[in-house]
Every structure is written in structure tokens, then in C-alpha cells.
Image 1: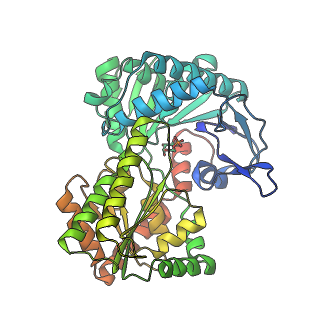
Image 2: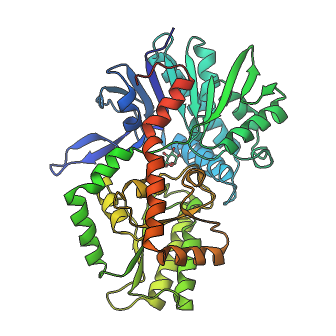
Image 3: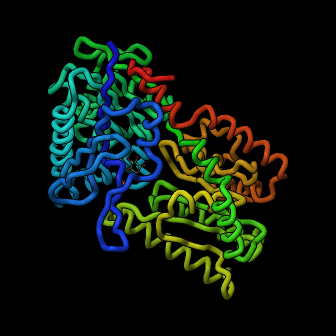
Length: 464
Ligand code: G6P
């Protein structure tokens, strides 16, 4: 019997609180993300989303968004610090990203992580009608599947990991790591971004829990949990439409003019996160300027660094280092009114981003490790003109799909510099062929295809 009710459980709710001109506050749907992914495949009502609304203190009452009922899970100041900033973002996040920054372990963080996961599981158990499908998202909630199964064995439970899943040598460093594996195994289907992540998980189940595994199937407590790779994507059609609009095209032209109409614009758009390789990128650019292979004002770099997790030590240190480096490059290579790096520490809305993508000649996406990286896919979708060139780290999940990008190992500074120059000087016909091939791929591998593939694998009825 197919299940028809869907409950999504994610750390964040798909809404942002906006302060209106009148001073009143209003909740608005966050642009992009999972809600838009799910919208086309959901038939009418029947979806609930459980998550954190973003502040601390009592949970707010929230309006429905596009027919999706929202239920907020509260966090106290202390829980925010120990569960979100602590275990989720100072233990799991760095460790799952190849420990590019040193993961930190504290017993009180682990206790808070268990407590909050239990709270999310209880909220899901309460909000789910009999036989519903509950889809748990990401590294904040790895214990929820097993906790929920214990409370509600009637539910079908899915889990999707949005970030990389590390090899055993790294994963086994986490104290009580077996509990995380058992938590995830509570799901009927554990989804990862890449086949490599899925393989790491199966190897760990075998080595740490000693359970019987058969390719992508694991026998656990008399049932079978399945494992698979489901690379996430974006709403390609929506972005293509946006990028083709008169308003966005005019905005892109205005942006080029504001930058002094340089011959070449390099663009980076990242959350200000140490996994994104922003320092390496700045260093490569600085050396290119020093070598005279790139010159201001003919070429400029625009770096959007969206503020993120600002109270966490590693993030504060990163911001200092990036801003010092930007200052250094501009001091040395900028001219009056013509900086070498345009550094923007803020977030941009969808239409502004589309204009930036359209204005950029070379998009530089060079994370040291990334589960997927949707910026790379957004850039391609925003180039219906087949213009521009994408420089993409081989350590982003997206590199396994966007094979025609100028791929690079961002740790290899000389290779990074050469690849940037290659993309800057690319023959437009060759660059155009690459963009066209990547866009053709994305059209059939958009976010709806992703959600459909995952939900179909869980036997959730999806209309074609
Ligand atoms: C990554 C994670 C998401 C997270 C986002 C923003 O993409 O996979 O789960 O929501 O970063 O981070 P934040 O800490 O602000 O939620």
C-alpha cells in the first residue's frame, strides 16, 4: 500500500523572518532549497515540515507555506551552543569534510546532540499520520531515524546526507561513532550525494557494527536498510527563466559597468566557510597578479562571502584571514577606485545572484571538500547564452556530474593558477560547447528528478 503523507524533518525550516518597512515581522519561504524541490511532486496538502525556526527560546507559531504545515522545534541558548555550534558544526562538519579544520570533541556537545535529536524524533512521531513517510535531512539529525523507528515502527523512514560522508579512518575518530551508524540505520533508505559516500557508509557498517552487507543492502534487526547515491540538484527551469529575463540581463550589464567594464570578471560565491577554499583562491589570484599573468583593471575578482556560523571559532578565524588577504591584495594591486578584489560579506537574493552569474566570465568554485556545491550548478543554469566558464574543484560532489567543467585540485596552487588562466583565455567556441553539454545534463538532472528518484526508491507514490 503506497504512503501518501510526507513529513520532512530538517534542522532548518524553509522560512526566513523578514522585517517589513513598517517594522512588522513576517515569515517568508526561503528561496530555493527543498521546498521548491518537493513542490512539483507533492499533490496538494498532506506535507508537514519539522525544523528549527532560527532563534532561541520558545518555538514560534508559523503559517503554512505553499500548503506545507510548519512545526517549529525550539532550541535554548545552551542547546544552540552545544548541539548546533558544538557537535553539529564543530565536530561533525569539519570531520566529514576531510578534517580540513581540526574537529573538536566534547562530551557535553554529544549529550546535547542526543537530546535535540530525541526532540526532533518525538515531534516527528507526534506529527506523522499512520504509515506516513518521514524524510530526515542532513548531519544535524543522524540519530533521528533509529529514535523515530523505536517510537513509530509503522512509519517508512528516509534519510538524506547533504554533506560528504568520510572514510572509516576519519569517521572512527568520533567518540561513540557506532551510535551515529545505528542512528542512520534506523532509516529504510540512507541516501548520499555520491557513490563514494555510500561506499564509505557500507564499509563502516561492516567494520564497526559487523552487520551483514550485500552491496547496497544491510540486514539490521530483521529488516533490510538500503543505501544509495542521489546527487541533489537545483530548479534549472526556474533559474533559466530568471537569467533570461530582461530585468536580470539589464542588472548584469549594470554590474559589469559598475565594475568598470573589465575584460574579464572572475566570480566566487560561497558561504564564508573554511571548506570552500577561499584562501587558496585568493592566494592563486594574488600570485597571478604578481606574475603579471593577470592585470588589474582588465581582470577583477568578485568574491561574495555569505556570513555563516559567525560565533564558531574556526569561522571567526577564517573571516579574519580572508579579510586580511583581501586587504593585502587590494593594497598591493588595486588602484584608486579600482580594487583587485571586490569583497562582499553579505547575502544576495536569487535574482541578484542570477545577474552576477550572468556578468561573470569565469566562475570559480574551488572547495577543498563539498558534498555537492549547488553554486556550480546554478552558474551553468544561469548561462542560457552558453557564455562563461566554470572552474570546479574535483573535490566537490558536482565534479562527478559536471565533467566538462575546468576541473582542478585546489590544493595544487600552480594547477589552480594555470586552470584559472585556461578558463580566462578559453576559446569561446570550446567554452560554449562545455556549457551547453553541462546544461543539457542538468535539464534532465534537476532537483525534481532528484526528489523523484529518492522518493521512488522509497516507494512513495510520485505522479509523473
Ligand atoms: C550546508 C548544510 C545545510 C545547512 C547549510 C547552511 O549546506 O548541508 O544543512 O543548512 O549548510 O548552514 P547553516 O548552519 O546556516 O544552517
